[in-house]
Image (cartoon, rainbow, N blue to C red; front, side):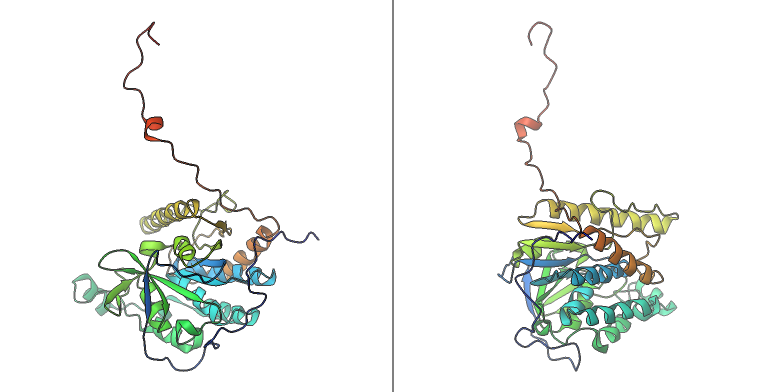
Length: 339
């Protein structure tokens, strides 16, 4: 069997705990969160795993992690937004095969009512403006506090960074230390569904609003080679074509995914370093709160990534834009005999 051709490897020969790190367990500590606006950099390392948001569709990233780990690809840092941030911090808390399988089991057991329980009172309160979300984040908080992640971001074995969005400015804000649960609740605060989360003096919402695929943030943190673990397609090259959904709600979600996908491709194409985009599984599921297909997504993410690792190709760099003079069309066609 041909050995897989792997992209640039992490500078970490293994994954020893960093100072202050420990596996996920125990009570949460008080919050002294370190926040960075997008672009505020620190030199953490060369290889980053970037986790795209996508609700239940982010389950595929666990299969991708399983394949990458088997191939010996280990990052220097992880960066995630929205549901991708949950995977990023859970993986960074225990970046072993055992840790990945534990997260896979949790994904497989999830149902919408576990993370977004709906009630008539909550729906009415949200619709008439009495509260900032249609449901409470209590269920998601209980899941995170069950030991899925370490109490504080600086305790992860691999440095982890959570991308959120400042509700006032709409700009991305990167959380790199402090209370891990609060950071993950903030980046998961899907507008209109979950209420914003206050961290320090800022009200924060879903990181996918400002940076659903935070490649730029990873590079500002020191990444020179980035692996993007996506949750929504299409993949560059059309390896797994998206299934076209039916119904108004499904089509609306599909359109949102296309908007986010176009923004992600634009960010990846102007990255300074090398970017590898893993293949996205095709799925009939378009509802980010539908968890019935998580086992299938995990298996597909694993299978596609194993095949992709045999001959990985980086995302093409964006061609230089033409000058204004090159783009400007002639005002009129030349008259006969004067051309």
